[in-house]
Length: 222
Image (tube, rainbow, N blue to C red; front, top):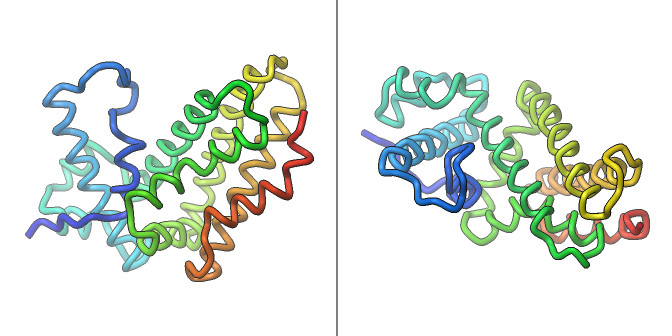
């Protein structure tokens, strides 16, 4: 039986509305939409099982059995179960960068960066059960392999955000301020996520992030 349940990735449908590399000013073809739907369904099932059973206890065979698909189909979209989670994070990083680029030019660095790094939270709050989102946050934080990969991706996010912030401020790409400001912004976001997980979801992650940025605000002024 196919396991098709609304899961954490419903909040990511907005992040992945278009396959990677597709221009967002054109309508995707039927084949592209079909591939996207299959990719999202596999992701939903995989994240549900990984969060419920644990990373090491869940195999690709478990995922494809629950999804009613073959290993061959799974590997068309994801190289491994780890890649399911990592691709999610990569997509969110792209969304953060795009959000920062789209913020009003007159907005202060602190406000623009806060909106950028919390874009994923905004989507999840609007479109998904926070309990299930929290399960995936815990999965990443409690699985050493996923945590290590997530930190690697955060370094890429930071470089992309710094480049955008430098352009916004008319600064050289190697200027210290964009580099330092984006590192602080991602540290604030990461700390808010950790505290949310440690509280078992008792605190609001968006409120935590806003508090963190309020503390950083003086340092983020040009």
